[in-house]
Image 1 (cartoon, rainbow, N blue to C red):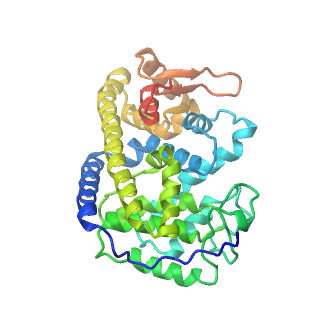
Image 2 (tube, rainbow, N blue to C red):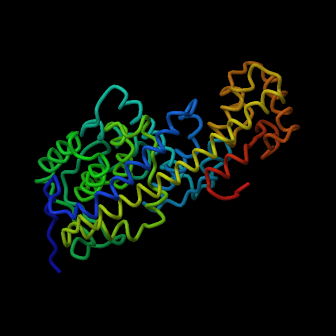
Length: 370
């Protein structure tokens, strides 16, 4: 079968069933509003939602085929040796998290643009699989998507010809810079069009999913770019891919927008519930940490465990701002004695002890892990 590269769809999208879409889009906007209301109330969202951010990095990378788990990433953060067969997967997850952080910092003083997206992409592929696929540069070759080793003839999807890519990307950038479009509809179209254009040689799925919170933040629906959709998309992976494919096969934007908007509604409620549980845990533990330690470092110590629910004693002292190791270890002992934290692994030789806040890990994972 002689397949040809996809012709990029024109933007904006027309001929939609607005009567069916508008109630869903309104519900998505309302769900995002509820989530952002809680986000604004958090004393330090970057600290409190750190485990959720890590989980997003795990799930978005898993959609692309990595096998790393949240527990493995958190254990690596704590200094536990990585199994050799997991090293590359874990590095990709860490890069994703770093790229997210870079994107958030960048959007504080620059608007999202093609150049910003290339900078994020360069960080995503730094030193990992794909580092030889021109990180930070849009492709100048034809690519295709299919089973490993497949030829272009039996590819599942062939993105646009690189000759038309620059013009298509400029049109896409112009579309996402337009503030007249409803933001939920806009991000739905922006994500799909990016995946259709597939402008990089590698990392397109991860960058495309990263764009979701970034654009919601830029459009003002979120006070921080901390809304993660990969949990839903990973759970509905086959339909996610099928709905994207139908856009180019049959022009079915309606089905895609309905699927994606429902994803936003469901995930916004899930994210809200997780964030509520995390905030409740933080508020519950704060006076308990203060009572248990009677220390000026009580709250910094709590924050350290929210940044790293599994943490070694050396990092704990650094994150808590404690210069004296004896003071740090004494504080950890008091927290263990009061059963507020647990010893994950006792120190041995040069290896420091590792402690965990199991309740937070279980909330982030969405099930009892520890």
